[in-house]
Amino acid sequence: MPSDPFEAERPHLLAVAYRMLGSRAEAEDAVQEAWLRYHHARAGGEEIRDLRGWLTTVTGRICLDILKSARVRREAYPGQWLPEPVVSFLDDPAERVTQRQQVSLALLVVLEKLTPEQRVAVVLHDAFGVPFDEVADVLNTSVPAARQHASRGRRAIAEGQARHTADLPEQRKVLEAFLTAAASGDLKALAAVLAPDVVAVGDGGGVVSAGQNAVFGMDKVARLYAGLLGRQAEQTRGVTVEPVLVNGAAGVLVRGEYLDGRPVLFVLTAAVADGRITAVYTQLNPAKLRSVDDRG
Image (tube, rainbow, N blue to C red; front, side, top):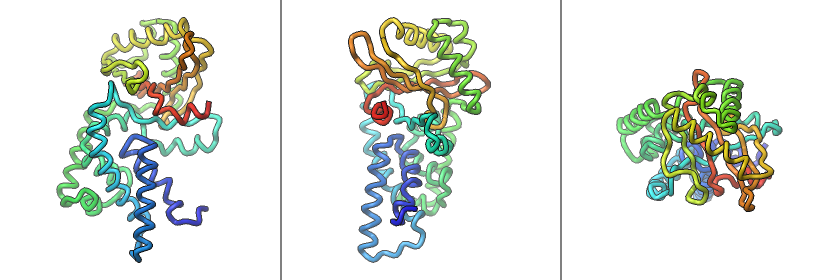
């Protein structure tokens, strides 16, 4: 067990910050700032009765500031933005345990559409049980206003989140069928596993080609991935497709190289409901795949 009380709370704080920010790197920076504020408070003689509660609200304030500045950066982001995925490898028992605590990519995608205040209110209150009087303190507003931010955030989540209700075995089965059909270019088989209102989002970060806009609808998404994965075999070599967990959901990690020597590296996962894929998320931005790239 960690001897430093702060270190015992670090996993919890990282979970809070990641849900708010959608970036592991930014979450780690936020928690490090919380550590500095904690030690400054202790050095100043401040009495902290509820350490977890104190650190959670401090981390919430830090994340709120980051979200406000990040909104400007993300509005100028090239193409579609996806969260940095948390990839768990199936051969790692420790990661199989921690994946149960992960927040889904489908939820993180819609959280990104909330205002900073809505996101902080929803995450702190709904995900971590922080009372609304403390949420209001973080947001520097009244309790009724904090409740309103949370209510509006919940409504936006309910209206915008891709349906993702399948258990893990069903997710794997549907994803495997999707990948097999896409690789063979079988549009009929693809249509059988795609919901009519399916959406596909790819994040290349302006470095890797991923399309500037999300793709909507069964036909367009089927043709997109039949083209992408069908052509891949002709244009690449040494490609491996490894089943992984992406934020606790079924996914694959694809590695290899193009014939001209450029690396192939991306993570793909999907939201699944009623036996069909409702959303496909493909993370190709190398900056957001450093953790899986380092493992390779």
